[in-house]
Structure formats: structure tokens, C-alpha cells
Length: 473
Image 1: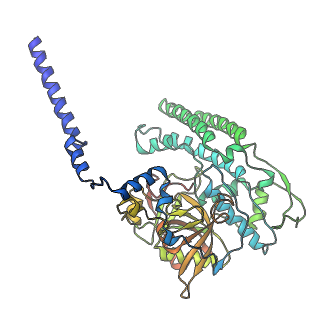
Image 2 (image 1 turned 90 degrees about the vertical axis):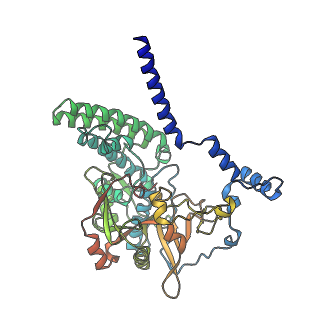
Image 3 (image 1 turned 135 degrees about the horizontal axis):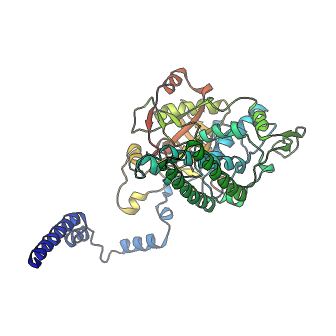
């Protein structure tokens, strides 16, 4: 018996060893490492190579890769430019979508009053309700998927992404009509509004704990009323955490509008956030007033796409986009800018951006020459491999056109403060814009009938894990 057991053990160990060797076949063997090492150029005694390695090891790569041929003065004249307004600063938060959307809204308000009035909205106030709504979205999503295995893609999604501070223009369109708006001076920023990471981490942990409890309640066949009651109790605790970090949302306030020089121009009035929103918009609702377009060369153009589940409120609006070539997107942007109106837009802002000059251009840095290689992927390949995607929303404010009406460069109002870029702005070359611009929100007034008809198509549903459908931060 002992001999038989030893034989069986030997067979098991032999099989395990063979399996391990098979799995290890994809690893770096000594032979492979030797081949890799031999493929390196022989730079022994090469002073230029030694200087290069020393330079790269002790300096920022962007400083070394900077293309001097592209480092001259930037043309700051634009043939089409909307009126300037104060620059905002999102600080250490992912609220760029809110800052950009509010910048568009306050510019529209000023335009309605011939630029005689100005206002800045409280990002903190609406962010409070954004976080509360996202907490409810997560908890209700957990309830809806509680009968699915925890390992399923949808059930896992809510635990992976319980809450975040990123988003899109749709967030403002869903939240502002429901909760209203307030001026920044009556509900100023808190430390946690400007530095969201710790607050977000604590609420995230709490929501995961709550999510597990709700799943168990569904598994234990608790009544729907009991589950809904418990969810409300959970949201009450989240609400308290938000009050402690962002402040208690204001219900009423007195406010008088001022001009750009700070001079009071209207009588002080008593407002609720909802009545203030109504006055700002002149009764014009955001919902249904715009379309979102994107440029995704992986997918068929002139078709619509909708992102399931990735929205700000449970009963709100999924992201829906009309996919268009860049030429069409440029014409939409030009039409609205010519009308004196800014646009919400989003980009892969970190690519080839000269932060000191506030200039984005594909020729700003020559990484290929510095590294002795090439980076040949096109826009579609970069998106598909997660190498590029929409990372940051900014407010499109200007375009410079040539004699034929073709764009030469663009300008955006950023939300990184006046010390960033060109006094808070970024100028983008036309070639950079085509490569790293992704989303645009256009008022329907400036959309041709043919494109509006395309936007009304039944959308193809895509999942939020798609590399292009990450939230703007």
C-alpha cells in the first residue's frame, strides 16, 4: 500500500511539474534574457550614449524631449472668440465636468444680459447632491443585481465603482433642475470639496459595507419595503458624512447680481436654489436642449451609442452620443462659437501638453528620438488599448480660422486656476485637437437637421468598462 501511494504521489508531482513548466514557457528564460541583452547596441566607450543615459536618469523626460523647433512664441489671436470670464480652480478633485458645465451655463447667463451681469456657481453645493445621488445609484444597483453572482460583471461593477467625483455634462443636466443652483459666495468650497480623495475613500468603504448587507437582505428574501427602508437609513448615514465634509446644503439665501467689476447691478432678492436656477436659465430647461457628440474611430460614424449604468442619478440620463468624424465635430463647434456661446468639451489633456506655456501640440515633445523608438499607434489603436481616452473636461471658448474657414487652433478655459497654462487657458493646435479631443456638448440650435435625425436613432448599448467611456476628471 505504501509503495502504491508513493507511486501515485510521484505521478502527481510529475504532472504538477510538467504543468508548471508548460505555464512557465511564457516567462523570461535565461536564453531569452541572453537574446535580449545581445540585441542591445554595443555602447561601450560611447560618450554620447553615456551622456544621454545620465541626462535621462537625472532629469524630467519632458524637459529633455521638448522640441525646440516648436518652442517659439504662440499666436494668441483668434478670429472667433467668446467673452472672457473669471477662471475657476477645481483643486485636488475630479470635478472638471461640473466646472466646465457651469462655466458654459454662467457664460450663457452673462450673454443673455449683454455681459452686464456675471455669476459663479457653488460647485460644493451641487457636488453634495451629486455624491448623494451616486450613493443611491450604487445601492439601488446592488439591489437590482443582488440575484446575480457576486462575480458577474454587473454585480461587480457597483462594488468596483461605488462613488466617484468624475462625470459628464449629463450630470449637470440631471442635478441642477432637481436641486437648483446657488452662488459660490453663499456656499463656498470646503477642504474636502477641493481635496476629495479621503472623503471619497471613506464613503466608498461605507457603501461597500452597505451593499453587502443589501445583497444579503435580497438573498434572505426580505420584503421590498424592508429593503427600501434600510436603503433610506443607509443614505441618511451617507448624508451625514457629506454634511460633515461638504457642509449642510443651503435652502434659502439673499443675493444681488454684480458685474465683472464687482459692482452690484440688481436689487437683492430672496431665493431658493430652485428659483435661482430658474432665474439663471430664464425658464429654459437643460434637459433635451443639447446633444453630445464624440469621435471614436473604432466605431461606425453617424451612429448613436449609449453607455449603460454610467450616469449620475439612478433615474437620470445615460450618456448618449452621436459618433462623428472630427470634421463634423469641428463644424458644430465653430457654429456655436460664432454665435458667441462656449461649449463643454473633453480631451486626453495630458498628451503632448506643454503645461508651462499652456500649449497642446503633437510636436511639443519628441519622445521617439529621445528613446530611440517610435510610437505609431493611431487614435483608434490608442483608444482600444487604453492608451488614450477622455480624461478631462474643459470649456471651449475660441477658434482661429484660415481664409477657407478651416481651424488653425482652438482655445479652452480650464479649471486649474489662473497660475496654470496661459493664465488659466490652453491653446490647442488643430492637429492636436483632432487626435486628442473626444466629446462635445452642442446646443440643438446649432445642429443641422441631418445630424439631429441621426442622433434620434436607437442607440447601440455599450458597457461602462469601454476604454473611451471613462468619466471626465
